[in-house]
Amino acid sequence: MATVVLAHGAWSAAWAWKKMRPLFRKAGHEFFSPTYTGLGERAHLARPEVDLSTHVQDVLAVLEIEGLKEVTLLGHSYGGMVATGVADKAADRIARVVYIDAFAPKDGQSLFDLLGPKGEAHMRAGAAKDGDGWKLPLNPMPPDTSPEDAAWAVPKRRPQPIKTFEEKIKLSSGKFPPRHYIYAKKNGPGDVFRQFAERAKNEPGWTHHEIDASHNPHITCPDVLMALLSNIMAAK
Image (cartoon, rainbow, N blue to C red; front, side, top):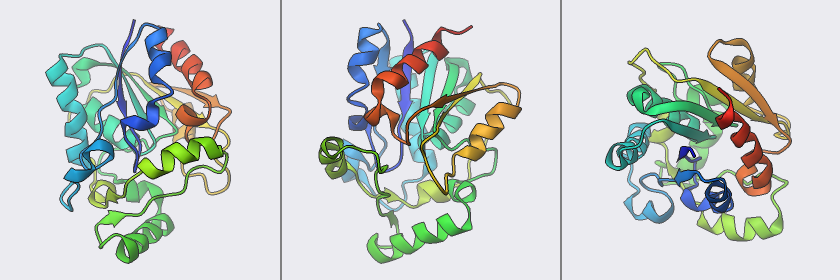
């Protein structure tokens, strides 16, 4: 049995992983899926000051209060920023970090740095127009999301404070658990995540995996994702 902790993606929350919960349970794993401040059931706490450090602390608090050790830490999409910060600050609690089509920053990088100037400009324009200057409007769901999945998922998504994308991560421990990267092959043109898949292929301390899915495999193909995660967690 593994202890699995989730760092979820932007605009999302624990609710987005509802298809994965019974799969983890059936496999005998304990699954913790904290929701970040300002999103999901904690959307009422959104405020301009919420930043990446806030979300890192949200997940760290679960590790500390629950006394979790030997954790498999999942970071999906924006959650890769959060998972990186958590693993840096609590390396003694983490057995491995699994990046699921996620941003994988180095010290001193923000998500905007990794997104690139055009992506940043687009996001900032959206926040200025529709987010009171501090909230990032929603990105669309992947095009292969079924109408049924879009019907339950889209209404639950919430704008995200822009400081979560602006803050540069500060890594200080010099230690990092083994890292695994799952790249979604169906992301299409303009895919920002390929750069991290290539990094995982070429840097020590990483393994590289691919999944025949677009950006949200926990929604579009949970069984396939579960099988791959099981293989990663079973490997020595």
